[in-house]
Length: 168
Image 1 (spheres, rainbow, N blue to C red):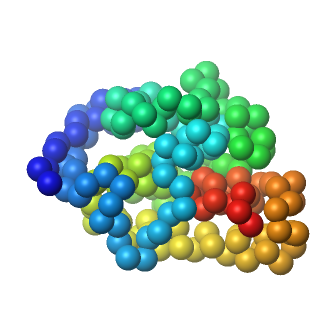
Image 2: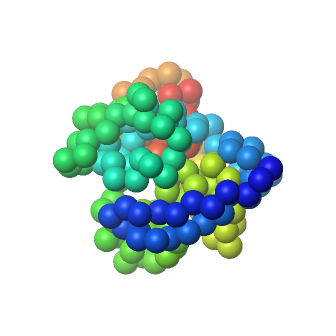
Image 3: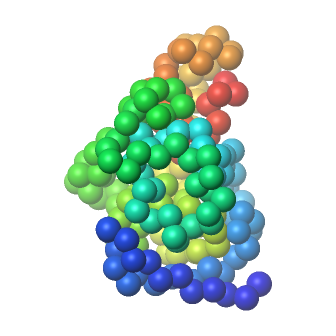
């Protein structure tokens, strides 16, 4: 694969540059097995539709064909489960969960990882992704299989971490 350089110019990053070193959607760390692609997540409805509204040029246009986006404001009705399952970015910054290369957080990291970028932050992000699995155990314990109305906030949170909670 020929390496390709990406230069980012959006509201949160000006002139940030990274290199794609892996083929899109392949060559993931063996411990990282997301159930949903960024395209699927955007089409289902995540982050109240606000997350990716000003950085579309950075990612494949196909991701946005059916994306449920809200450029004006965060709209929980656009989320698959119709509820908000997000904390404000300020909370993530306060907890020191934001890596300087990905100021929007985990999903931005995942989108860039998916298209082929690899960084020193990959192991930390994969560890965080794996930790979210605790919500799967809670859904299995408290909800009947297929009851999508049970624990909708947890289900939405799992979707936002690339776990397909519709299958639980």
